[in-house]
Image 1 (cartoon, rainbow, N blue to C red):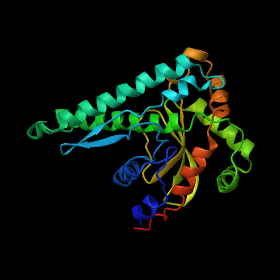
Image 2 (tube, rainbow, N blue to C red):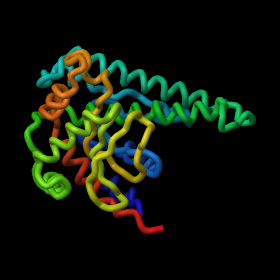
Image 3 (cartoon, one colour):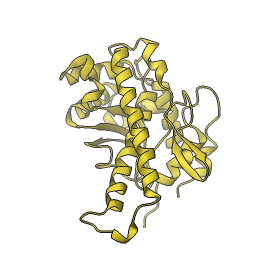
Length: 257
């Protein structure tokens, strides 16, 4: 079973926390339909309860701009953060419109409710995946250690093979590459998404998130995605990934139904 209480207990509140307790609650609510895990809490929490409604608040990742990332310019990161904030704004707008949507006109071909629900999944995943992506940037690259490394080597045979696989997946997909813990079989796998809400695997907790939309690299590299993928790996924060992994792998695998 999905042991949310156990997961919450794994996180300590501090200035460098990887997942906030509220984000873990969101993870539990969305685990059946989307891939969710918290990013580094560099600023405000992702969601704030206001007057009985949930309002999404953009996290502060501006520290990445002045950090001097290896191969990712300040302008590239700044423009990417603007796009992320746009998803936050749209997620709020859609949520507001859903409060008063006309449910009497429900129809599978077209209805305001249908369109809002579809785009809600796109906007919200756009928020979540970007937060995960920015949070696992800002490191010194290098290599993971401990149980995370063991899990990657168990799956791919060697760390170098995993990195090659990650980059190859990044060349294949049009939106995202997710390295995630599959709560169904209890192992790490790689998943590819062409859009925020397309091919999202249920019951998977992301531990490493790679954005391969053009907006993530066009300013610095034009259409040369391969160089961007090198830069991404060189700026990975393996400590963030390792903490996500340590929390995610404590989940029991889903029971047979």
